[in-house]
Figure (cartoon, rainbow, N blue to C red):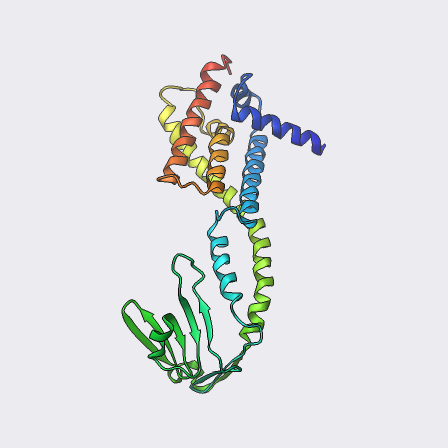
Length: 278
């Protein structure tokens, strides 16, 4: 049964990509809507999973989630595993006399991102050439050309004692990031496919309005069903461009415009060239 389904999907993919043997005429007159929807969903999920796999193994960075993850991992790896930060009253202290220096994970902007130095003063931010500095008494950050400060005594910590084992937290964060990967791999394909289906319906309505005068027999439902097959080539091309990291100017409009062109061609084949009468 499973092999038969794969064979059927492969047949649909091949004919949707290069329609011959009156394929779109068959979609119009013989194919059930449920099959077309399942075909599109399977194609979309497969392509997204393929993109995620390529991103995961490091050949590309297709999704913002994975770009953010790279930066977070780079920061985490720089935190010593035994570091503990204590906040008592208006004082910050660590269990080490050495400053904790975190370098910027963005290689296009090399330098220091953050320093924790309980013995430092405000002027140290210039010496460290960092954006953020935690001293023993205040938080200092660079805002453009200005140096801003925030005293701990004016915050919530003024009457609290807090111990943060940031080294242990960083060590365990890798497990949480891995869990987020698994959630993303399950969640992204489903959500992206729902968005694509909604977008295809909108494009189908637009195409219906554009073509109704030329092809009076059009029905929105059938235009939408045919779009689920006609989008095959644009979808595959979009995935490979994403994987290869090739940017397309105005990609949103480029993809939707290409989808409309392919859909109009599919409608012309189904309603005009197929030679069938309903």
